[in-house]
Length: 226
Ligand SMILES: O=C(O)COP(=O)(O)O
Ligand SMILES: [Mg+2]
Figure 1 (cartoon, rainbow, N blue to C red):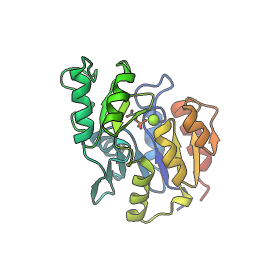
Figure 2 (figure 1 turned 120 degrees about the horizontal axis):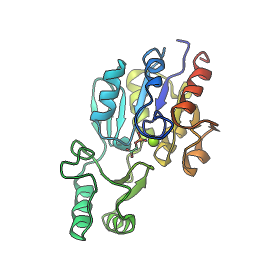
Figure 3 (figure 1 turned 60 degrees about the vertical axis):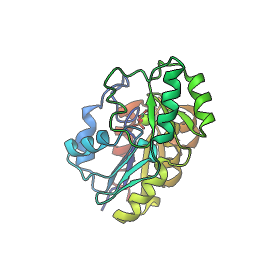
Figure 4 (figure 1 turned 180 degrees about the vertical axis):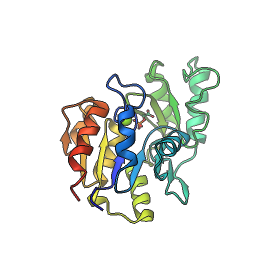
């Protein structure tokens, strides 16, 4: 093996320079990567699974900010949705909405947390969540109402144990506060230039380029470094 294992965030990290949609230039480097690639995201489970499937790599997935972990053999749930659902019902009762439309494909398959559209008022959400002992995490793409315990880093550790690679060798790339835990467990960590201050402060290095441009530059640099 000549490449380090990768831990990749999706939104803000694999995205096009305008921030939306995956940049197709990342597909081939990920598919051809000569080491395990873990997708660690705040998105619901089917999204990273589909990404791995369509790119053509083994499904190694941390979804819902660590709430759902898939090692390729086993699925682990580290929280349940009940409390976040109760927060959402109270938020609705107060006259607000998750903000994703009637069918809500953002939360439809979400099993351990609930995501709220960034255009919705966050203060009442934070208040209700706090009353239920939950936190609200702002990824720059959604507000996640979640149990404080799960995080992406713990999920990545579970996968590394099962697959059998050393996280000290791994490279993590991300853009927001929900990536700080992967930066802490991976040997080397990079924040793209569009990252929030939490991610920038936690990363070993802040990149000059945004989104997939930053990520592609890292892949180029670290490819032969193991
Ligand atoms: O779901 C989000 O809000 C962000 O997703 P990400 O963790 O892949 O950036
Ligand atoms: Mg992100």
